[in-house]
Amino acid sequence: QVQLVESGGGLVQPGGSLRLSCAASGSIFTIYTMGWYRQAPGKQRELVATITSGGSTNYADSVKGRFTISRDNAKNTVYLQMNSLKPEDTALYYCNAGVLLVIMKDVTAWGQGTQVTVSS
Image 1: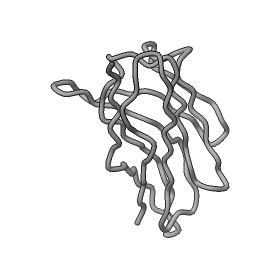
Image 2: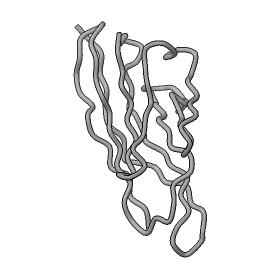
Image 3: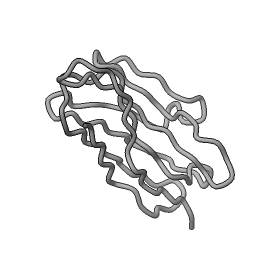
């Protein structure tokens, strides 16, 4: 019904930058809040940042001032600009979206994840 496809992960040195993208497709009527979560090995999945359809944002304390979330509603796409990356940012990053389908059903969709590795 809804597919989220992430891209932009990779290997970067400490202090470097990466930009993640996540495009939603399918039987979408509208998308509510979109967000990014991450899960490091041996740890629980945690919220990184969210953005509402109106553009209000929320960030985890650990990424405030370094990461910026944005979205293009016309393209059903959310972005995560990650600057000043640290080794502790290494994780599998997942895209998330709250979606109202054309059949007027609310669903929560997850992407398959994109790996971010910060290492020298």
